[in-house]
Image (spheres, rainbow, N blue to C red):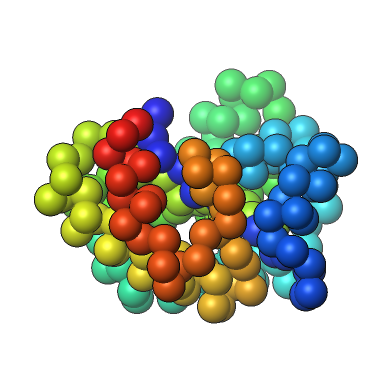
Length: 172
């Protein structure tokens, strides 16, 4: 369990929080924004390229991130499917910090998520959240996304909400 942030594309001109609330009501999205394996849909080469491009920039901004390489043969065996189907169903791109920060970024077809485990005290939490904030800035700028904090139940303003997110993390 950890503190999770979800990123999503909000249409131009839409009120961010109203859009999230309406989408939740219509059940178009659910939190966390992670599709089930059966909802994987068709492979979109542009979406795959988008995910890869985000991963490259994220790893540049946060050098501790390393791409997780799933064992698709084992996944296929556990799901009773082919390796090709396992690759199709589980095509999310996962980046994990190789240090002891616990940062995890998962880039799904439509919506990345960022998770941080609840094991940091105040001083370490502030330092790790600064690193995460740099990643959020990349995701918003390069991915055309906005950050939603389900704990605070609102879309974040990265220019002003850092301290409130850290406090919310420390209170969880």
